[in-house]
Length: 338
Ligand SMILES: C[S@@+](CC[C@H](N)C(=O)[O-])C[C@H]1O[C@@H](n2cnc3c(N)ncnc32)[C@H](O)[C@@H]1O
Image 1: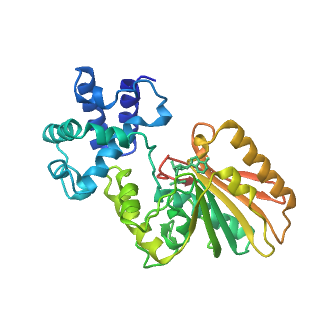
Image 2: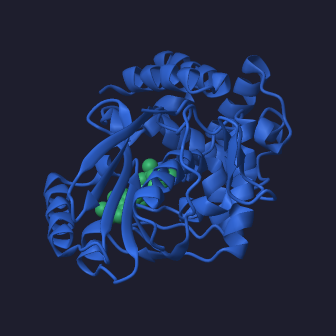
């Protein structure tokens, strides 16, 4: 897809997902590109990539990272994430200025795919876990593939309020209110182990890791930023290991355990796997499923586009039953349990 079309499409997505600033900025980049401005040089070599490569979000994330690092103060004045106020005229001038003065640096950052660890997806994942806990009241061994910084591995330490009920610690710095529409059981979720894998994990406990995570949150989305900061605070207190490992090899090493329900979960990572890797993972889960017993059950919980709309799906073994639990937006908002 041509970069202009991809940026226009991304602008619509940003608008729909509540970032008027990024929608505007992407359209301003398109205008600049079409008149042969600095963005032509910045995007040289990226003219024809798939939409999934998210070049627009890479560019915006790269510049946001510079703002967060404190090295672009003139532009920071227009970024709400650091206390600024967006202005399409003066903000664009400052943005263009950063592109002009730091082309090489911005281009080197474009090689990195966006690393969004979206805390809001915990709403779907934890809600799925509550439903699993009601059916299978065993302690959980939680394994996440494509875990990024592992923030969602701490989902039981966030607070969820919905439908007159609440779940999770009252003093959690991450609060979802309302978390969802629909009634969920008041089941107890006990997580005994939390481990993830990612081919490019981020450490949320380092300044650099936290800054990278923040750079991929859209700067005018105050609630997402607050949640991310809260989740990083939780991560300081609740350990979770995220291995630098691909999903196939991670699952190859996974075994079931008596007295625990082993849960494999994943959100918005399936699209990054090759067809072969997807098939290998499906086979591995079936293989583990065939070993599952009522004392050592297995579950797979996922939030993925299945195939087009985002769905929350739960599959359990030994029964092998697979259920769609909810439909939701890409960032986990607007969740309605079926
Ligand atoms: C869009 S992010 C989603 C992260 C997290 N699951 C969330 O929902 O916030 C996709 C993640 O998948 C990871 N990833 C891509 N291919 C992978 C693979 N083959 N094995 C493990 N992780 C992978 C990426 O590095 C990235 O962190």
